[in-house]
Image (cartoon, rainbow, N blue to C red; front, side, top):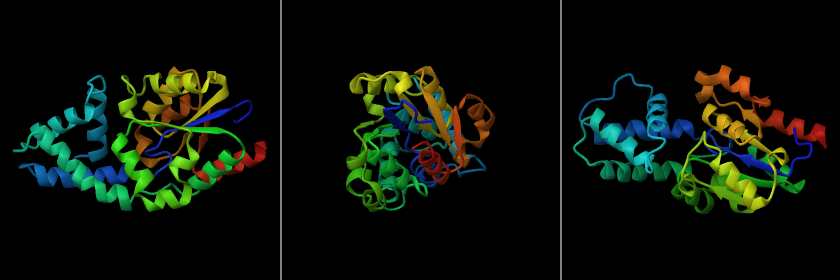
Length: 239
């Protein structure tokens, strides 16, 4: 997996950190507060993911998502007000509830100690990264992003989101490496597709929220892991 590799690129939500469930709770609370129509039996995660896929080519896809929520749940708030409320609800969770997946910090510190250059390629907002690096003690004390990662790219840093390879191409250009010198760690289909579109090998870290696309993910993946303990064992075997 790591033979001839120099750079390891990690996705964040669902891969490194256990955060997808948090956004489901946040959006459920957002709909309750902002909407006038009660929440039904919607799959919050699927509804959000489907909407963001539809709005992928819109410069501010999350604002478009808030407009979608405004219309569907007949909110009296503007889309801008809904987004502001989402941030307000989210901040406490981002500061206090988000944490690494088990053994992810150990994998990161091990790879860093072995001399690999680590980067993050995420579709999350820079606002979230700032909270993770300055206020979230769960993350800061176990493996501080600032100490571990040489580059951190967020949705604001690219014009085309995953599955576009743009973010990976930017990382390779800055670090002056070739696709065969990199490997990407991802959890979701859209990220796996971005890796393949960049011509880079991809190792999939299991996340239950991606199960709907599991067959396709496993078909495209070069390596698959159920958890970071398995990945750590693989790293040890190769050294």
